[in-house]
Length: 465
Image (cartoon, rainbow, N blue to C red; front, top):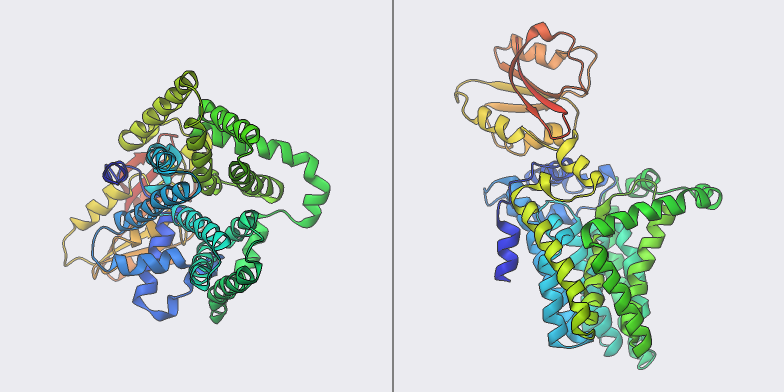
């Protein structure tokens, strides 16, 4: 746990704020300020548990970005403990300790444990729901049914797509004590459904399903276009797994699976099917996909890998040493220089190179904090939510002299809101991405600074005249 804490906390602010981080933290701030905003994530088709948990933590007054990332670290710690106890319950303490060590070292888990996103929380809840499903099916009781119900409800309140993982837990079912199992399982289902349907109190509840059309293929596309996109999409997903796990680790997972078949170790086969099915489903129906969708699979692949490493001979351990060293190198760059980390180009684009990466916002925040307190300031940004303006709004949530306003993408460089602020005697600044905003009236702008991302895209910081 000590090593886990060090790897997650060192240089926690090294990676610039990401678009979704800015949105989630801003929602959490609004949720705490007014009950009106309690269900605001539903407006964008997102379920709100992560923001509900984050809202009271932000009241502690620490840096909002670091606070959001610490919540993910806590979630990662829950994953670590869940993997340990699950592996110990399935096998033995030796395998559980090895699995816990691999969880700490795994670059995929490390990377997302350090971002204020929902994926680490979802992964932790899925691991613990699997653990309590195993406990429930092995020894049915209403207590385990209730615990599983609350965990399953939390999964659905984090991401509705987690339902797929919950349904796959049925692979663990045992037919003994079937009457008790039905009672406790029914209790779990009622609690989970009740928690999720709590969201119906909001008029925005239907927006959850409406946004699914943006991310999932239609039935017609699935039926008629399956042969066109299944294999290319599978290759993309698999390349992401390779980039984070490495070929030696994947090879050892396959060796572990073959060994389980030979030894008739059913639980390893179940774990592999459990990890494979969500991958195949996402490949089949996913329209917009991201590597982080695979994060919940990693703890279960680690358990398979750990079991295999306790069974193989010393020669094969040389292969294990190769992937462990590659993980350590990956981890080192994540903690010291993310640009040098062997991230997939898709990941580098999102988090380091494109408009979604908040390069320069930290410096702009510091500049604004050093302005005279008696001067009223309007900072206009492109867009209406996301990296801009939310990436700045979260730092000036309670400010009485600095207002951050997203002006969208107006036809003119200086929007009506900026013109009005100038008439009122306010200092007006503009923060935009050079390639995304109309800068034709550059004669009214005085450049303060520009921040060039590794992909050559630039964030511009102007004073408006």
